[in-house]
Length: 301
Image (cartoon, rainbow, N blue to C red; front, side):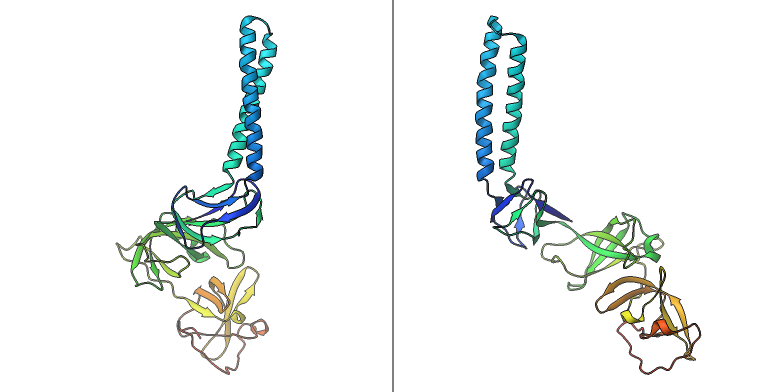
């Protein structure tokens, strides 16, 4: 789980004491703004507060002796309360020039440097909470209805030792991504210190309620060229080549789009051949001439 940290006031950053990857404790100072102006304002407000305090004490004594009216005393009481509030506000403003960690964690990203002027609320650091980690995944449309927040899962870090780390579905977006047509989700899991580094790739497997305690079979994935994807309105499809070399349009489920191609999680079967070029020139049942067939690591061709 990550938190965006920002100053509550605007100013120029004069110091940053942590870098990306640093482990910090709750309350630890991370960065500081130029506090000169805030300090002057705090001093001025404190002086006005002390003056208002002295005035109201004097008027209370005079009112007790019958030398000033109640309305005059009320005016001084109001001025004293306003000065006290202003002094408290400026003291807070001065304190806000130091950015502190709101929890124990690891600095995941540094988004501002010393010398940079930032506005209030602008993210300066991103803090990843230690302890429970999260894996960001994208659920295909066909699998969205099968899951709910709280579902048990196992996370396997691809660069790790292959251990299955227990977790659960913490977040599931109710609206899909318009480009990939997948639903962003977060799976929380626990790991030993040093077992997982931030940014590592992982594979998530959800527990099947119908099996106890087995895992559901992992959905097959194919990475196909982007040129093979045929977009027809809101439907995503590919042209599948039959044994007689005729083609038929078949709807598929896209889990993600990458630079290397589209990740398909539904609609294809091992050993099938698809058309990877000229997909918008074909028609249903048309026969083609296969020039070359290349098999990828997942079995789709």
